Image 1 (cartoon, protein in one colour):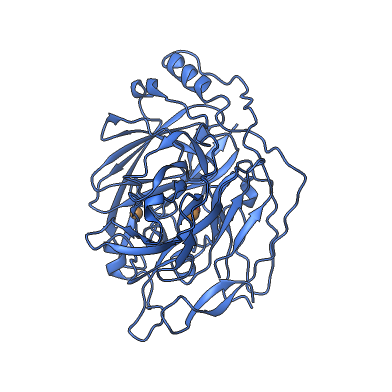
Image 2 (image 1 turned 30 degrees about the horizontal axis):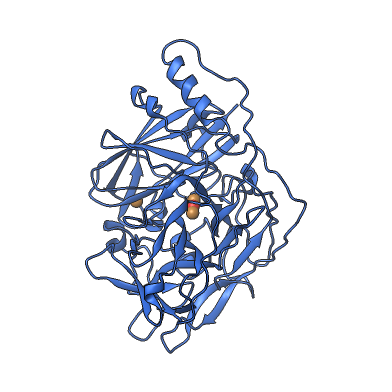
Length: 454
Ligand code: C2O
Ligand code: CU
């Protein structure tokens, strides 16, 4: 069900060619500086290795063992096709027609039909994919997977692990609870489950040895749950966020993954743990939830010695404080819509089910290769992990307080009543989604489009 795919190799080492599109007058100076800082941050074009990876994905019902002692009926990729669907490549910078948004970049793929997604990844790192149609149900039933785009020259880690964090809302007799998109889910932070799994298993065990240096790729594939894994028993750092290498090693304490987020860890199993178990627990909520057990052997290995990968190029963008936001987006709810409550962006809703294509007139517009500042104003008392397709952004400020996170993101958690400013430079032309990644919020309307023009 949870397929791991090693996709086409790309080294993220290209330089960015920006076509001198600098604005005159007014705020020309700060924008020019901000754009110059961005130059070279991530490659404008892919650097193909020539290796092509072809993967056939079929969406179908399946029975899986998630470690509860009884089989669970899910929907999974590969077997007959149950529903119209699409695939969105979360975080991957792909050409707009490959982005998997129904009614915007393609028609839904009907049962029995196929659609070919073909692209060259521009960035090496940890990504995932999932449907973009009725995703609150399709993702919850298990339709998603992970894409690891390998580094051109992989570092000699002792092992490279993928831990996909998810939760399931199960009935007493072990089935996926229906219905979906309940009033309760809508009025809260989406659908939170009663069983947490890591890569499709409840509390799996990983055998490791003292001294091992492990790259762990964390992916939050839950509809609504936020994870804050406690990694305090390890030495090491986080080295990448949302697929992109950070500009400096990030502390292991305080890491938070909202739905959609990924974090790559560079962990060392301490010698002092020899012969013992390390249980990684989630501490986002008041009840700590065990996620995974590392059973540490007694026979130690020499820790591989190599420089941290965390030396990516991420601009500071301190001058951005002076700029007024190019877009300001209010996050709120109101009564109405098919579920009784609908989540809005600037008082508007967007639904993939709405007949016909989405009206261009409702799009926001940003210019290609120009620095833009976007402000999210959370007028509600719920969580909203805001996600933008097709680009990476940097958090500039929370509640007006400037911040230097030292990493890119494609999804940022906006807390109750909080205001978050992000900075970005769109590089790829097309209509790109901006939406809340709490899938029930998105399903009820909390989505919109940014049209990046030339
Ligand atoms: Cu994972 Cu439109 O998102
Ligand atoms: Cu939301």
